Length: 373
Image 1 (tube, rainbow, N blue to C red):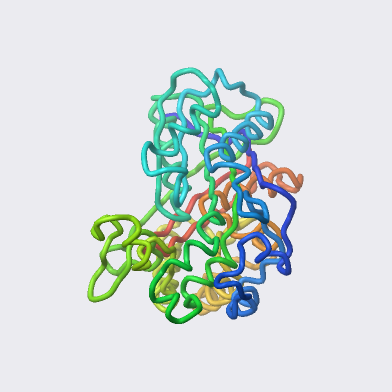
Image 2 (image 1 turned 30 degrees about the horizontal axis):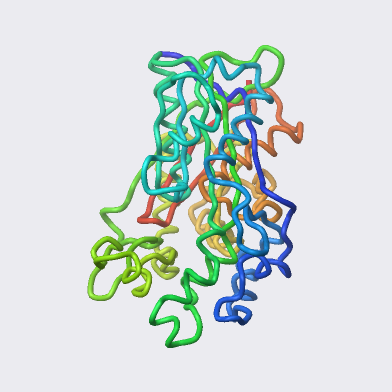
C-alpha cells in the first residue's frame, strides 16, 4: 500500500474582505429592514471579516465550480506537479451550482484537463473529509498517483432577500426566524484545494496522511441543518409540493438549522475523538497543531469545556484557525486553514497536525492526522 502525501495547497477567496458593518449591503435587507438577529449571530461566531462571491446588487461574480478550479490552480502552482499529472479529481460542497450534473463535472470542465476519473461529494462541512478520504484510498490502493481535491461554497446566493420574502409564514410575520437568519451572518464564500501524491515533495515540506476517520451518527439524530425540506408534522421535501413556487412559499427552499439539536451533538463529536485517543490513534502529547473547523466561537468554548472535563484537552496554544478573518467557508474551510498554516512557514519536519471537521447536517464527524515530512 502506498503512502499518501498532501503536496500542494491552494485557496481562493472572492473579492475584498467584507467587514461586519457591510454584510447586509451584500446579502440585502429582508423585507427592507436590518436583521434583528445580526448582532446576536456575530457575537456568537465572532467573525470579523468574510468574503462574498456576489456584488452589492446580488449579481454572482463567480461560481462554486469556478472558485474550486481557481483553488486547484493555486494548489498546483504551490506543488511540484502540473495539470498533466492529475488523474483523479474529488470535489466537495454543501450545494453545487446546479441540481444535475454533479459539481465535479463542472470543476473538471473549468480546469480543462484531459479525461480523468472524478468523484462528487455533497453533504455539509464534512463533505471535504469525504472527498479527501476518497482520494486517499484511491492513491493508497495504487489506482492513481496524483489527485486534486477541492471544497467550495457559494452560500451567499441563497441568503438574498427574495429567497425569504416569498415564504408565506415569513411574510405574515414580517421577519425571518433565528434558525434561518443566523446562518446568513455565519456562512461565507470561498474555495480551497489540495494536491495529493503517492510520493513526497522533493523541494518543500509535505503533509503525509496517517489516517482519516469519518463516522456518521445519523441513526441517532434527526436532521439538524437542512435545505430543500420543511418540517410540520414530518419532513416535506421540496419535490413533494407539486412545483418550485409552492415549495418556496412553504419555506422548503430555505437553509435552516436547529441549534438546540446541534448542541446535543457536541458530546458525540467529542466521543469520537476520545475513542481514537483510547485506541492510541491520537496521542495528545504528540499533536503540534490542531485545525478544527468550528462554525462559531461559542461552539469552540463549549467543546473546550467538554475536552477539559474528559481530561483530553490539547492545549489551545496549539490550535490554529482563521475563522475570524476568513469566515465560515463550510466544506472549503479545512483546506483554507491548512493552506494558511502551511504557508506561514512555522511547520517543521516530524510535527503532527490533527484536523477536525464536524457536521451538524445529521451528525457526522471527521478526523484526520497529518505528519510533516
